[in-house]
Amino acid sequence: MPRRAKQVAEPVVVVPPRFITEPDGFINVPVSKKTREEIHHLKKSMKVTSQAEVIEKAVAIVRAIDIAARGEN
Image (cartoon, rainbow, N blue to C red):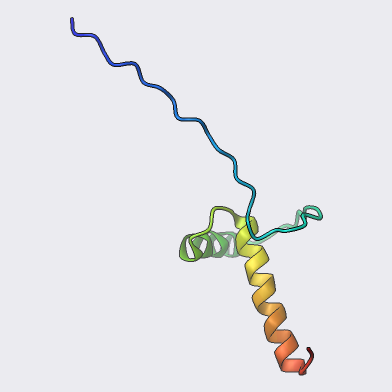
């Protein structure tokens, strides 16, 4: 019987999200099924690795729009 090559598992590298410069905490909020599905879609679309990145980026975008609409700096 031929011998099988040993499979060496590649190490798993956990990389913290690069967009969070100063982590401050977690939020745990209930969301609808539609919101959860949309966040998953945005995760793929934005090519990010986590839902946290989607939320951080979305908040930054909405905040920029809010600042521009108010004429703030």
